[in-house]
Length: 410
Image (cartoon, rainbow, N blue to C red; front, top):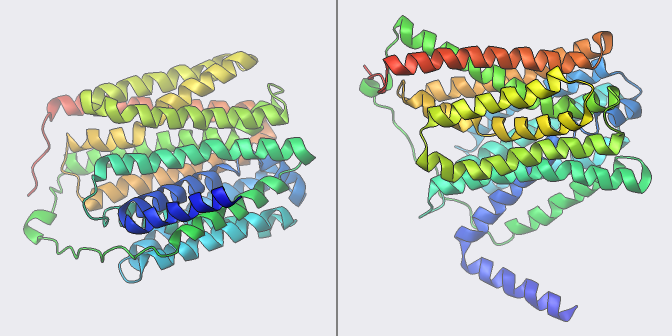
């Protein structure tokens, strides 16, 4: 015991001397925690329906409510982190998340559970936006690799959360221990704030009116809306599949409850591995070629599930291929868009909003139709949406040939 205590003390001494490593470690830990908190709802959905004595249709509002609250929280975080101390805001958001996760097993009312999840989403946005923005304020940091690592840890957390639920289900056939474990885990992250200095103040950005205005021609606006629609479609597929995969596999009889949770974890695991692998690939290969491979892979993966709905083995294979293919679409499309237009903050924010709306709308539509039509409608809706994304991508490839260089600002 004394040896372990000495190791911990020495670790804190080393970390105290290196504020840079401590901050990176903290932000990575927070993003991993966000991944766990975000991915835990999908695999536990049927248990939450049972706990609140509600229906899947009612519980679908949990996903849309979380997404709307996340948008509001992101907007709020953009204001707060420019005015107040960043670490104090992170502590507040993490505390709300930890307490909320611990309270979820006590919620017997569906409305109360949805409201609690919405509050969690605001706190999630606060921590998410905060970590991403504070990372830029660490002196002498290579932002590119650090940012990729940050999002990798989010995926790692998404992969681990369902495994925690599997352990909980095996112990007492419930989800309580899993949620309480996640709540207590926040204490381990809170300890990392002890003795950690606040990051530097944000750099004030004064936009230049001469360079801040974009060409407002029809072609430019139309191109922006087309890309927004692409983000809407594929993010909807990404989130919708992760949220409803467990329910689909159970209700179609393709997997038992524990196996369904493992299937969801496999999806996010493939997602996480792909994000890690895409970092060196993006250095060597042009974004449009990687995008083409990802889109084709997504069609292959989801197509296997869509065309062979009674094959359990193909459900696993399709899930792995889809998770691996869809993981890097978001950053790659941002890079690809930059080859056709100058990427200002205004345009980038529109793309993020498009993806967020897709993550709200598609899971909500699935929840409103699955009880009346049956579980197969989940994959049908997702596949049709992926077809829409594929058509849009073909249009963008054609446009990129006409505009191989970024269109100029005016």
